[in-house]
Image (tube, rainbow, N blue to C red; front, side, top):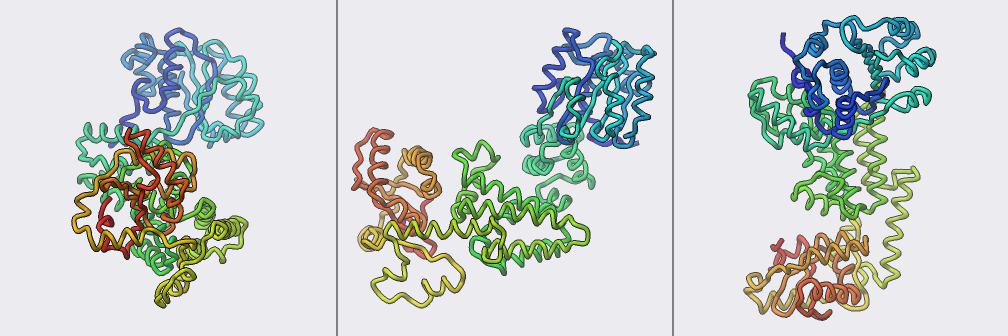
Amino acid sequence: MHQALYRKWRPKDFDSVCGQEHITSVLRYEIINNRYSHAYLFCGSRGTGKTTCAKLLAKAVNCLSPENGSPCGKCEACLAIENETTTDVIEMDAASNTGVDYIRDIREAVMYAPSMLKNRVYIIDEVHMLTQSAFNALLKTLEEPPSQVVFILATTEQQKIPATILSRCQKFEFRRISSDVIAQRLLYISEKEGIVTEPEAAKVIAKMAQGGMRDAISLLELCAGDGKEITLKAVRAVTGAMGREQAAEVADAVSKKDTDALFEIVEKVVSSSKEMTVFWQELTDFYRDLLVFKTAKEPAKFIDLTSDEEEMLGDLSARFSPATLLRHCSLLEETYANMLRPGASKRLCAELAFLKMCDEKLDTFPEGLTARVSALEEKIALLSAGAVPIAQTASAPAPKSSASASAKAGETVMYKKSVEAPKTETVKETVKSGQKNVREGLKPVSWWIEAAKKIGEKDPSIEPFMKLAKGYENGSKVLIRAEGSMAVFMLDTPEMRSTLASLATSISGKPHTPDCFEFIEVTVKNDDHPINDLV
C-alpha cells in the first residue's frame, strides 16, 4: 500500500527535525542525562512537529542504546514502537475521546507496570478538546504519576488548557518553520523520491504551507501526482494560487481607482475555476507586505523578498498612506470572514470590497473615516508649506485634459511649490537643447544608497521618495532622478540639500556643496529626457 510522503519522511531522530532546534536540543540533553520529565506539553500550529517529537521522545525514554540523546531505531524497544506492536505507548486523540471515562481508564491503567518497555508513555493529541471534568480527573494523575509513566500532551490551542494542567507540565512551544527551511526539505525529498522540482516552485509551496512542514510535503505530493516536473506554473494550476503578480495588479488598480480593471480580475479568477478564498488569502498576504514595507525601518527583516519584489513593493507602497493600507488590510480580513459564511456569494464579497477600497466615501466604518482624515491632513500640510494645486500655478492656460480631466477620472491632483517655478524645467530644457550625449556622461554616485538609508531613518515621511530616487554625477553637478512632482516637492528643499551635501562629503570623502544638486522630475509623460531611461 502506498504510504503518504509526510509519513514516509517523518524524522527518525531529533537531528532530522527541521526548524525546532530550540526544543530538540533540550530533549536530547534530558535523555543523555536521564533527567526527563514525567509530563510534557507541546504547543504550536499544525504540521510543526509536535506529534513527531512526541513519538521520538517516547522512543528515546525507552531506547536501550540511545545515540546522542536520540533513539537508535535499531533496538527491540525502538522497533516495537515503530511497528506499533507494544501496548506501552498509547496514542489517544482527545478530539474524539473527550469524556471523563477515558481519563478514568488511564488512571486505572497507570497503576500497572509496563509489560514490555522501560516506561509507559501516553501521547494525548488535541488535549484542549477534553471536557472540564476530564481535565479534573487527569489532574492528580498528571501531578504524581508512577515513576515509570510519562505523559506527552499536544495541542494547537494552548489558551484552552487549564492553568492547573499547565503548571504541572514542561511546556515547549513549536514555532512556525521558515519558508527557506521548508523549501530545502522539499528539494531534499524530491531528490530522494526522483521528483524533478524547480527551486522557485518549492519556495511557492513553502510559502503556501504557512510554516507547516506536513502541509508543505502534502502539497508537494499533490503537485507530483501526474508524474511530471513540478514547475511554478504546475503548482499554481494544482493549488489554485494566482501568484503575487495578480495581487500587484490589484494594488495598482486600487491606487488608480480603476474599478473596471478590478472587475476584470475578479472575472478572471471566477472564470478560471480557481478558489476565490485562496486568491483572497494571497491578496491579504500581499497587502500585509505592503504595510510592513511602508512602516518598518528595515522591512527585509520581516519580508522574504527578491530584488524585483522589493522594487515592486517600494513603488506600490509609495502610492498609499499608512492609514489607507491599514484600512485595506482590515477590509480584506473582514471580507475573507464574510466569504466563509454559509451561502455567501464570494464574487459579490470581493467586488464590494474592491469598490470600498477605491472609494473611501463608501466605507462608513471608523477605519475608513480615519483614512479619509489622513488624506485631508496631508493636503492641509502641503498647503501650510506654501503649496497650491498645479492648476492654480500654471502661467499659461492648462489643457482641458490635465488637472480637470484627472479630477474627473478620480485621480489625485499633485501639488508643487507656488513660490517659484521648480528648477526641473530649466535643467530639462538645458539637457534637451545642448547636451546630446548627456546620458553617456552620467555615472551613478556610490554614496547614494547609504545616504538615502540614513535620511529615511531620520525622517520616515521622506523614506519612500528617497528609495525610488537615484543620484548621478554629471561633472561638478549631482543630478537627482526623482519620480514625479511630489517627489521633487518633498526633496528639493534647502534642508535636504544641506543634509545631502554633508552626507555625500562624509561618505565619499569629496567636498560637496548644497548648490551642486539638481532635482529632475521624471514621469511617464517625460520620456524625452535622457535621464528617464536610467535605473
